[in-house]
Length: 217
Image (tube, rainbow, N blue to C red):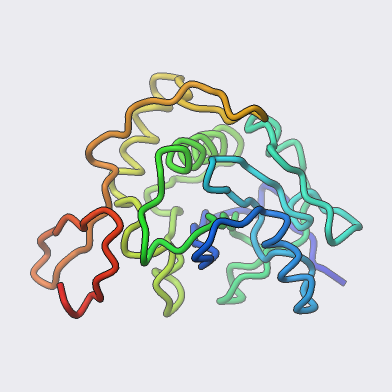
């Protein structure tokens, strides 16, 4: 039987990418895990490349493994009070983390502004509903597991946290995706470009779309 957790159990927010080279839908991601014998996708929330937010069977505690809530309203994400645990490794995070999967492979491409806006909105809504400090609770998957995820091209975490803090203080949500693809899109801030920390502590701007190996940089 799947373990049950509550919103109050959540102590961490973990962000990872799905690893897909081509663009796929959240339903396809979920079905891939169903075919492996899992209870759908291991994530709680899936962000598509167009910024669409989907809630997985785990998060909505669905009795149907293929039931995903597509294009979910951000303000209603936490209306679900009890969930099946997130199937994440290491196992100690399964009960106490909100696991966000971003469709794509950000070791070979950069995420776009739609993903950035949806992600920051989710983090703001998380702070509005769960008593955590993102500066200690927000984790990139590479920080807890020996894998490069959400990827070397993903947003610099320090800027992401700073943007969430400033946006929450302004009580302003820059973008909410809607079915016809509309919404208010803000210009991508310069600082959302991804960086890789060098061994000496300096940062080096990665070229957009670069596929060079890290060893060559």
